[in-house]
Each structure stands twice: as C-alpha cells, then as structure tokens.
Length: 329
Image: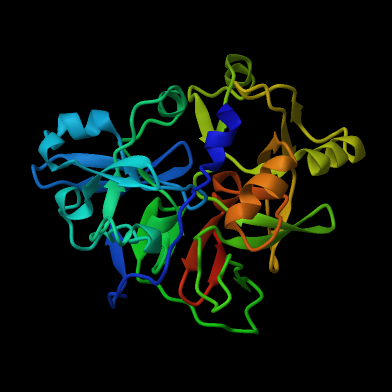
C-alpha cells in the first residue's frame, strides 16, 4: 500500500551507537516545503539531497544517484537471511567528516563491516514517493541514532552535537520513549513523545519526514504549487472524534492523492507552549497498533512533523533520550 511506505517501517535491529563528536556543528541544509534535507557533499564534488526522516526506516542512496555520481563500481552485494542486499559504504558517499555515517546494525555486522547506505532496486512505491518528495538519499531512523540534533525550522538550519540534560524545571523538555531489549539497549530509533490536543494527551511518533501528498483539488484549495507539504498523521479513531466534535475545524475530504482525509487542528500543546494551526492526515489505526508498534516502545496514535514543528526550534538527543521545543517568537 502506498500509505505504508510513508511510515517507512524498518525490519532490522541496532546495537550501540556511533562515537560522539564534541562541539555544535551546523550542517549544510535545505528546507523544501517545510521539510529538512541535508546537502551531502560527495567525493567527486557533487551533492546528494538527503531527506531527513526520523520516522523513516532504512538509509538509502537511490540507483539514479549512484549512476549520476558514477559510483556503480563501489556498490557491493551480500545475502542476509536469503535476502539480497545491495549497499555502498558510507565513506564512498559522504565527503564531509562532520556529517555522521549511518548506524551499523547489529544483525548486519557478520555480513557488512562498515557503515553503509542500501541501494534499493527501483520500485513503484519508491518512484511514487520520489515524484512527490524529490530526494537522492533517504536518511531514516538509524542515521539519527547516537547523536543529538537541532532542527531550527524558523531559520532553516540543522545542527549536530547539541546535547540535552534533564531539567525538571523546564516543562518544554520531555523524555522520549524507545523500543529496547531486556538489557535496556535501543533496538530502533523511532522516538515516542506526547502532545496535548483538544484537552487529551496523545502519544505520537517524532517524525520530521511526515508528509501529506496533495491531490490536485487540495493544491487548488490550499493555493499551493507544491505536490506535497510537511504534515502530521493521526489514527482514524482520533481523527473521526475530532471531526465529530468540531465540525468547524477545517476539513478536506480525500485531500491526499491516496484519498486520505485531512483536518486542521487549531492548537497543539507541547509542555507549556501552544502552536497552530496544524494539518493532520488520517491513517488507519492498524498502521500504529499493528505496524509501528514493531519499532516503538508503545502503541502511538499518530506522528507529528513539520506542520507542527514549523513553529519551533526542536532539539532531540538520542543519547539522553530527551527532546526540547523552543517556541519561535
């Protein structure tokens, strides 16, 4: 299903994390339609546009980019549990030492010894998504693990090495949840957090890549020239309650190309800050209870992304498992 790829569920495990480099570093970044991209310098002087999706699964460089950079000779192949994996070492892609390499997953270590990007075969789903969200490389959950990041949505800047420490007096810092093994090691990098909407506290996924793919009708209604916008998602059961209780909230029936409905929530509360309006697209309850639960510490009811984050400077620390929201004035 096309909606399934928007969640980008990974099937692989992680153990440990990359070394922590001291000092705040600004990375070359670009913001397109409310979503962040890292501009990855390559050894041949070109640049890859890497889509930042903390709610995504694998890390990948697409075959079209591999061909453009003439990196075909660097692509390797192995078989893991009877599945053929094509990949390229991160050192053959990233020329800037300040840009972290993807995490090396524990289950891959007997087969792949270095950090890498997968090189997936072209598929109908990936081509569909790239048509709405143009990018050369996909930076999912394992890219962000083991580091602290600041996404300054107001200024369109990304920083790495911006650690957080627990401060009970700061209500705008909250603890994140991660799926872990019995020893307390993170298995996945999909963070759970909480927001308050319409007086109800809701568990959600922290998802910088959440995107709403606009139908032609919705583009016209929103006066948007973009085929997709930064968004947030919510379970159908919650969406339907909102629509029933608040018929005055802006609503677009079948607003997405996937025919999913959209609703605009006037206000979302995080800590002691309030921001809005925020667009949410409807997703099946099973996407969370049967899908994302595989990579998260609890069943969440949705995901929050750029339609909410646009109002904040957001710092997320995967090591201290904290997130801070600073309201843009």
